[in-house]
Length: 229
Image 1: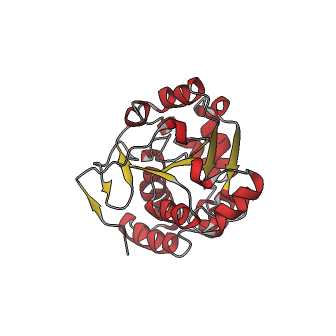
Image 2: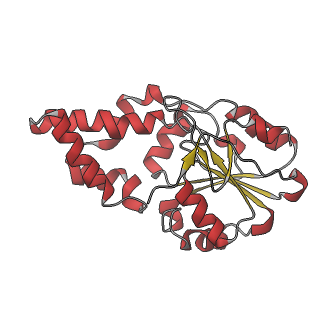
């Protein structure tokens, strides 16, 4: 069942004095998710359709069904898996449209703000290492992170409850004094089940879609809302 979304924002304030560690998602949180949505929903189906001499609509239907089978798993973001599964060079295709990789509004300002208030930031992403290398090569944000953790390196996707206990073995953190920001409610629910104390949902991960506020988590449109606490 998909999380219920509303057009009404809810917000539960916290104090930065309560936070020791900041965990940040990449796609849809710091980066505009339009790149990923366009890639998987339009560019890959178009390429797949041409290669297999089928209609675009047929390709989309087939691929969306194929994607669904590995949703919320490491395979979903594994470029090597999809290259083999679809007989396409997925890393090369990503590079072809890498000009679409872009920051979300105020992402750099927020990362600078975390530096100013001396809150260590860690990137925690499901992105495949090859995707991460491409994106960090286009967008200069790596310098803001104390460390970067890919789900593939941790051992499971963020949607899985065991991700957080596995991450804690790599990064000791106080779950009650940790802030985690992500655009995916299933991931946030997983973090909540583990006991992370402060969870923030991004209401507009893609610049091409309207905001959708969560009914289950504190939801923000932009980082300015966190910088004014």
